[in-house]
Image 1 (cartoon, helix red, strand yellow):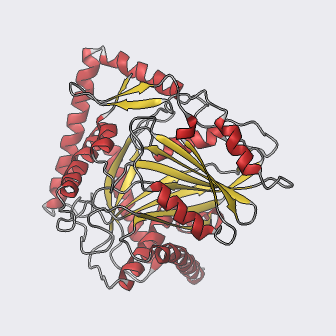
Image 2 (image 1 turned 90 degrees about the vertical axis):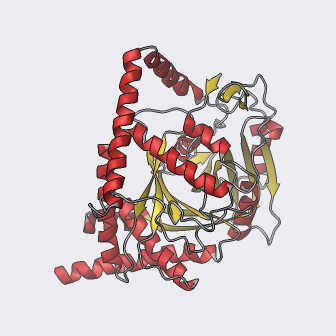
Image 3 (image 1 turned 135 degrees about the vertical axis):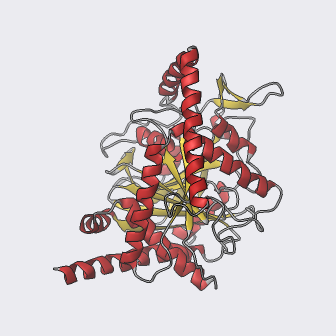
Length: 465
């Protein structure tokens, strides 16, 4: 029996039919050469046979009137309640139809009377492809953890045909070890006092930084929450119905820009998104006079620390003031991200986690009271970056060509964007409510903004040389 952290609990408290709180992943595979047309359907039947379900995939949430909710392990899990097979029809089996199906599957809440995960095998894609869509409650895992689990369940070579379904691998061992270390610490009064003191000191330091920025005694030292422009189609009351779109660029091209400008992948990706969002908003008749503010998750785990649940903070980040010059936009965003890095390094992780909970509660209260259309949001959208495996992975010889994390929508935001690097490509995954117009166009603009940045950087370096 495992108690939830406050952050994990928050995902249950905030959950509703209109705003479910699970994270997912879409994996697109190409069947092995000379494999039969029934490869994916046979794979589905094989997966059903792996009925020895390991933690955390055998855990059911238990709510109590007298204490915190707890995870309780089930003696048996009926895989037919968690594994599903879909067959796309010929002529309706392209990327757009796949995304429409995944959007439908991503919308419903997971049934709380059983372990909170599902796997959908989608057969019949064009060009000898099939897909696997997995979703799991955010209280069980964050995006980084789910990607690690997915990688653990796949093979590094096409010749390795052993099946290792992610629910049968046993991800709970590392979590239990980490839990025992935590329990050992809580037995020490000095350890408790030190932890509380560090958290309070960090919160006080963070509050002072916010107060100085709010009083304009510092400039761009830290981004303030709830100052983003709420008069855009990106924010408002989250409603049911989802849509999904993607874009991608070569990592070799991204690394070339990074080398020429001494930037990071985050700098380049956010520059592309900033340009794409401004162009998209301009199409929708919205002209911003201040920078777009994003919410950005940061990983708070120590190096080498694994486990289930969540260990993240979410902080606001101002992007670039409006400009038509991609190179200037890149430099502005680099300056903003350096300030964020200084803030994270100067504040204890527990304080950032507390800050995330406080701002999240305020935003969720506005959402619950139906005030998200009238009150300013924490940010205009949420953008996360999940590093993925650098090389191709395989499932019974089938190459995984693409992997797209699909997240949940935070209170007050109608769009969530996930960056993901895998096998030489940088993917942009966009999940939004049906209320957001022209999501596909925004995905296309991200790719075009990268082309513009690349040209601007090359032009600038030609002038210098």
